[in-house]
Length: 101
Image (cartoon, rainbow, N blue to C red):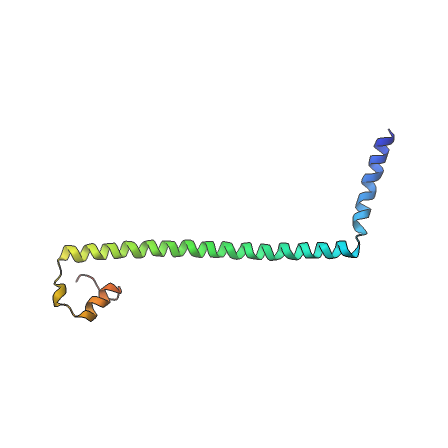
């Protein structure tokens, strides 16, 4: 019975002890909270960057698919590349001009 009373008394005193933190405890809590806030901000930035990276990966896949389609179209058309100007060929390579008309 004494141990039960002791445990109840201890449970009642613990919240009061937490209220009377020393200055070093308060500073330590502030340091930990500030670090948590910075870490939360970093994680939020990481999420944004992951989303941007996923979108960029999708764009890269589309660019590859487009390049492959354009290449296939040029080969299928059996174009007279020798009759083209260098500027025209460069424009086709840079995706600034139609590969096949």
